[in-house]
Image (spheres, rainbow, N blue to C red):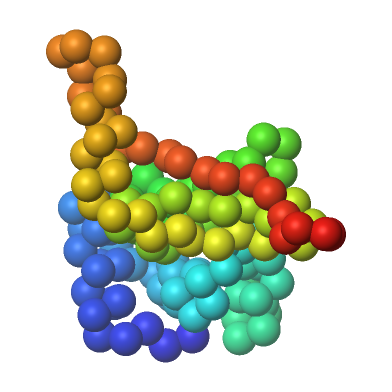
Amino acid sequence: MNLTKKAHEILNGALASSGLRSTRQREHVFGVLLAQRDHPTADEVYVRAKVEMPSISLATVYNCLETMVECDLVRQVNFEREPSRFCPNLAEHAHFYDETSGRVFDIDLPNEFFGKLKSILPPQYEANSIELSFRGKKPGH
């Protein structure tokens, strides 16, 4: 999986700021996440990664994903008892979980929406991040 020059710079910069270096496996897993932005689970990333890198192990994929979350390259998204999913969209947004298909969609919200949410916090507190998710399904399904 070849990364674009920009994606390669983003990966290298984030890793370097954490005192880490890029590896073929990290580049490959990051490329898998960027290629199909459908919020895959670690197991789904593993299956996709093995197509072009048959020697990669599930443990390596988990380690790469953990490193990317720690370096703020991807977000770990959790829905109750479902397996964790991974999202490379770092802009503030919400998620919609389709209970019928299990698919997860990014929901772009106006910037002022997040400002209003932050304004209702208890006095003298501020939010570092907001995780907003919706659950539901298409009517009639």
